[in-house]
Length: 221
Image (tube, rainbow, N blue to C red; front, top):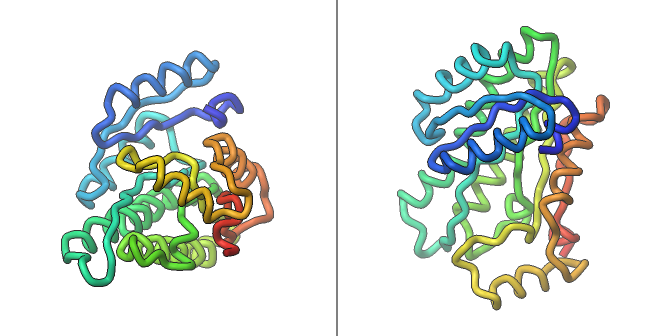
């Protein structure tokens, strides 16, 4: 919505949240912009080139990509299964890379673009209770920095690392408090905090290969 209010045409992607995706498009149009809805399971890599092709055909090309699809599930070194590992590596590292790779081709044809990946401080400090998740986000941080080098100078690639902003539905109040207590600011963030960082990276033309932490100082502890 922040990008729509700035005049961007929005491609709304969803896997299973069909009603929410169409509601988002309604709000985009209400804000005075245009867009379209696209469905794809990014876990099925064969659907990714089709998704990008459909976006290009409907909207004329891609200038900005915000990679924010993710899987967040607990798992320790001792109890993580092969399926846990595959699910989170595929969703959190492999799929964002392949989406960015395809979108970058469209951007290069248009003379440049911006890619923002939603990463996590867990990829830098590794959370023992979320081991596969942390490693998958570490991989996405590496993907972000590597793509920044590969696509320079035409495409800027950066990451935003949110902290306790939107909690999983299964989190108890105790888990929420524990997450907040691990921040320096001792309070949860808001979606607007994350949005402002993403917009900043899109509007700035001299930042690439950077990770901006919007986590209340969680990464510094």
